[in-house]
Amino acid sequence: MAQQQRGFWGSIKGVKLPDCQNAAVAVHKEASHNYGGAAADWVVNADDASATFFIVSNANGAVNMVLPVPTYGGKICAVYNNSGHALLVKCLGGTGFSVTNGDVATFVVSAAEADAIQLSAVLAFAV
Image 1 (cartoon, helix red, strand yellow):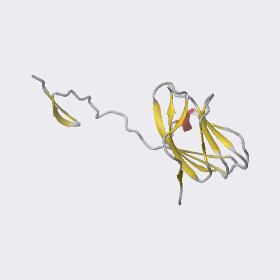
Image 2 (cartoon, helix red, strand yellow; image 1 turned 30 degrees about the horizontal axis):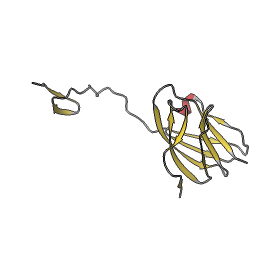
Image 3 (cartoon, helix red, strand yellow; image 1 turned 180 degrees about the vertical axis):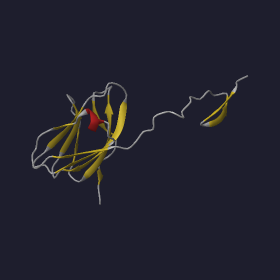
Image 4 (cartoon, helix red, strand yellow; image 1 turned 120 degrees about the vertical axis):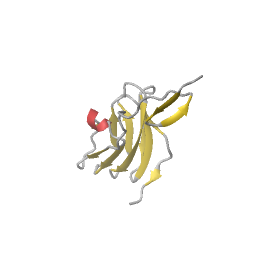
């Protein structure tokens, strides 16, 4: 007969649960990039790549946000394009997807696809 597991998550008969009391908690992190009136790529560094929400602003032409390819799994993120122009979101070497100025898109950074994959229809953003 299965033993009852008691701990942080309560009791579930017959199911052994991990001790989650010291588990890391996912925290929202935001990264932003001001193109400064230019149209150069934003090659996202490792620290900014840990963000879940990205904001771009102030470009003078179509721009790219280039993310590093994750080493495993994937991560769901969102981006708000406030650059004034089209934004291409992709991983290094990938094809990515486009976000119109003023829109928000959700996406996953996928190790399996080695690219940024759009999850939602692009949403108009209203302040």
